[in-house]
Amino acid sequence: MEDMEVERVAPEGPDGAPVEEEPLFTNLDIILFSLIVGLLIYWFLSRKKTEETIPEFKRVTPQRETSFIEKMKKTNRNMVVFYGSQTGTAEEFCSRLAKDAQRYGMRGMSADPEEYDMSELPRLAEIDNSLAVFCMATYGEGDPTDNAQDFYDWMQENDEDLKGVNFAVFGLGNKTYEHFNAMGKYTDKRLEELGGKRIYDLGMGDDDGNLEEDFVSWKEQFWPAVCEHFGVEATGDDTSIRQYELVVPTDINMNKVYTGEMGRLKSFETQKPPFDAKNPYLATVAVNRQLNQAGDRHLMHLELDISGSKIRYDSGDHVAVYPVNDVSIVNRIGQILDADLDTVISLNNLDEESNKKHPFPCPTTYRTALTHYLDITNPPRTNVLFELMASASPEVSLSLSVSLCQGLYQSWVLDAQRNILAVLEDMPSLHPTIDHLCELLPRLQARYYSIASSGKVYPTMVSICAVVVEFQTSTGRSFKGVATNWLKNKVVVMDNGHKATVPMYVRKSQFRLPFKASNPVVMIGPGTGIAPFMGFLQERGWMKEQGKDVGETILYFGCRRRNEDFLYQQELEEFEKAGVLTQLNVAFSRDQEGKVTHHTKPLCQLLTMCHRYLDKFTCVLK
Image (cartoon, rainbow, N blue to C red; front, side, top):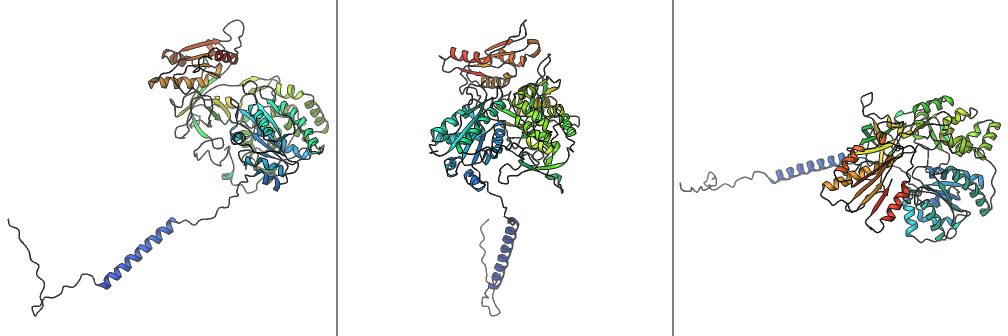
């Protein structure tokens, strides 16, 4: 078919002349159309902006004071006590020193070095008759505590002139560890190297002995040295000084009342990562089984499900667990003190400038405080007993004071394992108000356990291996470990059909396998000390499955009796069969006539020396 060309013919008028065709839109139409489109666009954008722009209400948040010098000047303080604390003991000692200061002509404040700019330490010389005291605990293998890490780094990296800065140091450590009181020793030495003036000798507390007694003995010599150095006199006033005032709210909103949370209100109802000491994760209990077949002890293996928490851990890390106190002890304390435990209260710091507004999360009830926040199981420290004397008759107060000073604290309180309930029961003349008791008692601390699993093999599960602590005291009472007895009763599914949960978080550790998988390893871990090595073995097995060259792995393990408490026997034998465990050396202390005590630490040191010629050799002890 041929292409057809169509010619367009213009319209003609009556006279035959071509007529000009009218445009579809006139100029006026175009202007009106443009105006309408413009108005529509303006309306749409304005509407969108209005929807997206939420009126900002300026939130007034007080800026946290990071200058301890300016705070001391503002509040007329001349003594600051810093604490490096992992479990709360150093913080408690620090608070006691700051509280005692006014009895010795000083005005003290307790301070967390993590919250302040420690580079201002040289400025302390600007304050007349000033003093800095450091209560420094040593963590792990000679490391600083988490909250003292930045201060430790500052001491290492700076050469500031501390001329005119007076200081004293009390260290908290444990002689069973190789680097005993390393942080206290380093702080004392370094502050002197930087030009500071030591006004009293370094104190070294030993947690393997009697830490409380070590601190009290040091404190009794420290204060006279302070008085002599600054030319002040002790007031001689030993009456109880309240640090917090009781407030009983009249208009109570129960949604604003703490029910056991460590930090953020309602954090157990609405879980938000990251999870740490102030924001623990509620892990469900997936497994809770008894490890030993017989005997008078209960050794348990728990598995906590951390799916969806974004928590990561490595072999050798620790899991921190927040326990709950025995309900029967809580109720009995309330009964003795004639207190309504369900009263909502708040203990507010009398020092309005203090960073620590409350001794525990407030407002809350006495029941919650005694159940979740306060240590009511361990023997009370001497300062608690001395302050409780204020509620006793003068005769009883004098008798108790003399007894404590004569060293009966060790036998009557510590050796007999008298907790605060036992003290109140055995000394009925002591009848403090319950709010005063809550102020005096230390915080219930998280319990740390070496994780008995590998994060590479079980990324959504954290395992715990522990022995339930329970024994009879010399007073005939039953002493039960807070955390282990609480965990023991954590059945996987409770009577109400809900899964049991445990508030927890992971704390990193320096306890690690060698970087190279081919390095040989000797592990020594009697009893539940085998826990981290289960994680190590799982990881070495995983490496072997990945085709990596895994070095020799030797384990020395022992417990009481093979037929009773050979912990993880099946798993260990399977590791040995698979070649993951090169040697499994076991010893049981009571499988013969006489009990044999295993001296594992000297054995580890001996093995290390014997293999010193092997620079790739690693010996790990737990």
